[in-house]
Image 1 (cartoon, rainbow, N blue to C red):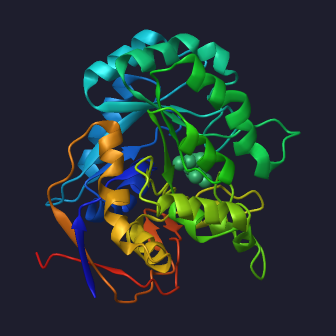
Image 2 (cartoon, rainbow, N blue to C red; image 1 turned 135 degrees about the vertical axis):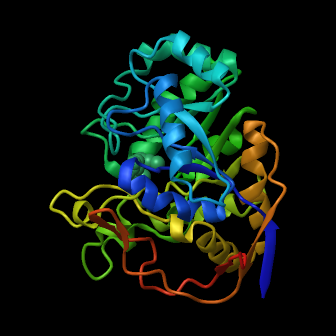
Length: 346
Ligand code: NCD
Ligand code: ZN
């Protein structure tokens, strides 16, 4: 069985820099026409100038003959001036601003300590029509790690959306029934990206027969009822939910460590695993809109006019990929994946 579909876009992606960037970008470029590139480098991409320079490094890492368009983001800090937001919007290359609560995830130390510090910047995001892309977790020690998304929505996101009635917001990598409900009931202009792992795995996958560092990501995997809610939303045909892999490569050594990094490297199976889970849900016919239409429409961008072809043919992603001196373990490493990408014979 073959499935030809409009070429998809990845609305949430980590590409890193240097050798890692060169190693990972071909996997995305083979499948996706465009991707929203997250700004959590070290140091973070806090200015338009840094975003434009990073964009050039990404384009230089795209293999000859492949077409790929990075859609850049700025990293919001307590001190981002509104003028920087306006510069970003005027550049045409930046499509959103990423809110990382300080301490929430990889390279978020320079993130926002209190959203009140960002009122002027957020007003500029609202006014320019850029999108606020939100890592939706509180970080307070007393809040259980599995409750962080729900509490963030109650305490931070709900009020921001009310204070800024025209602000466009993406609740990135939504993981809970609470997040799904919030987006479903919100005013227009609010959407969410959905990762493959949060559709496919519940938190048991972190402990299956032993500790599984390659299933550790943030927001962390949730209980089964939340996985079901995320999966139902993704396959519902509701245009507010669209594809964002959150592919987040880390070296094998930094994952398999006494303090392992959060992130799942899914780019090498970045569309195939969605086909699997949509098929399992009996909704394969809704994959194309989720992967190739809803995100572009939300961001006000044209749909891609070329196609990709998937085939129902099982393959096993390798144990690891080489990236300079490092090795990176992909999602579903060594396990059969039911769908394959049919590559052009060029
Ligand atoms: C991401 C990373 O490694 O940059 N990690 C992850 O687990 N998703 C950061 C993020 O998106 O939270
Ligand atoms: Zn991410």
